[in-house]
Length: 197
Image (cartoon, rainbow, N blue to C red; front, side, top):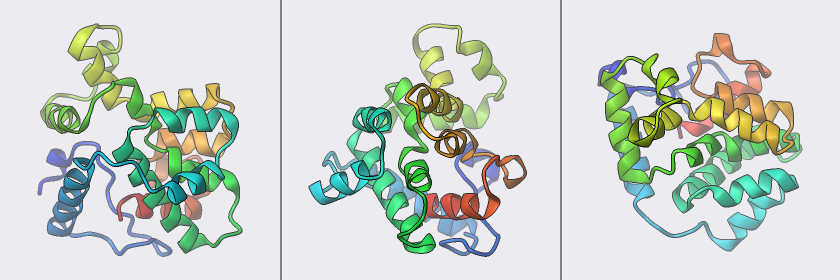
């Protein structure tokens, strides 16, 4: 699958210490298909997973967690648990929070699963710079821009919520290349790889 068609979806980590080996295009397509079909399921995460996630979040972060839809919370718990499995139970709380809230900026657009698929297809063909101008627009263009800029929006939401800087920075950086990561690169590589699981 051409990388332009993948839009802003994270690319697999290729450095050591990742949860998965680098994915091939077919494996990545299978991964994305599983994510899509899994997101059609409306159920919330099991209560034990909800409580586990909440135990790693501060008060302001919990309010953001509650704004995530069920598929996003299920995905986030999977990423969080994978990060803990890889780095160990003694990792700092803010690393787990980063795994749990990396996609929180998606709440701003209000898009559900099918609208997200549409937005991803739109941004696969439109130039990225349009999103900046559309943030001042209204209607569907604003929502498309909010979805495209969900990493930056997530960082702003987390800063406003009083989140640790690592948690907020990872929300903004999780789709960027490794050279642009602002947090510890070993931790970031695990967060990125576990998000691609």
